[in-house]
Image 1 (cartoon, rainbow, N blue to C red):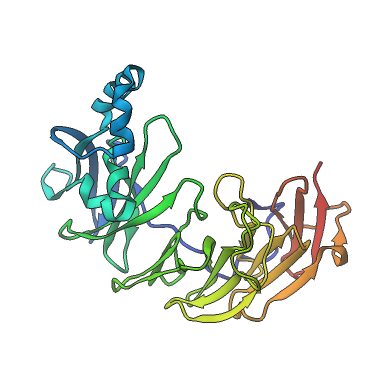
Image 2 (cartoon, rainbow, N blue to C red):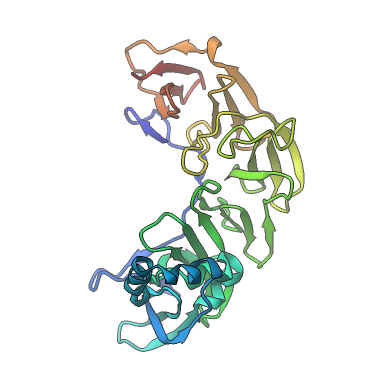
Length: 354
């Protein structure tokens, strides 16, 4: 999914787009870095398998040791972390190499978020720095937990206090074949959407998971509203409908429902993907439903006042391309439509790509 302008628009964007965590790189050493109180600090992150601390291997894996081929394969995986603890070290230091803090974590620290047995059999990989969240004064890292050579696993989100290095939150960021992976700040920076969680700068966490339905995707719509879309059972699950009725919910950042509507046609080949885009030029979110062949428009300021455009009533694209048009490609299966949105009038034209 992408949105690219054809030429310079006749007016600049008028809305703040959804932010990424602020990150920097040390231009001298090429290391991840963060600027705190005007000082550039370097970030070092490593992982080391601890062969002195074996961890209990799940029974279904332990039983395979009777097979010599499997035992040999496991012996190759051992140095990479299979069946042993690991030490994850994150160090923040100044230009002179003096440490501001050094934080060390182990596999069991991630067990609650990623599964106690799962982290035991996973490769130890260095945390990846994602950026700095100024409003919460937190440093964000992704820590991978995949079974070596497979797609079985996911990543944890680790948030560290930027002053002390103390862990403030460890939660699941994404999982293979799970909900669409997102990590976005609200425009005012007061809340972070981490796939299935809304994390507030004051430390509060709101889960978008529901016991009676599978979360497929979530998107921030503005400073107060999030869109949560749930699998009806006709997408990646392949099973019967879990819950009849509208599967898309508009929620405030505390999880209270503000509205609902039906949205089909989620991409669900490997995990879920919402066919959606936000254009700051029109202050509007665009959601494509290829099952019902509609385009839903959610205004930035008032997402509850949405507009539903049947594909059949949209104007087909005919050259020339207008200088004020921005294209949105929301490809899905056999249909590969490109929508051309006029940033002045808001009118939408479409073209099917072969």
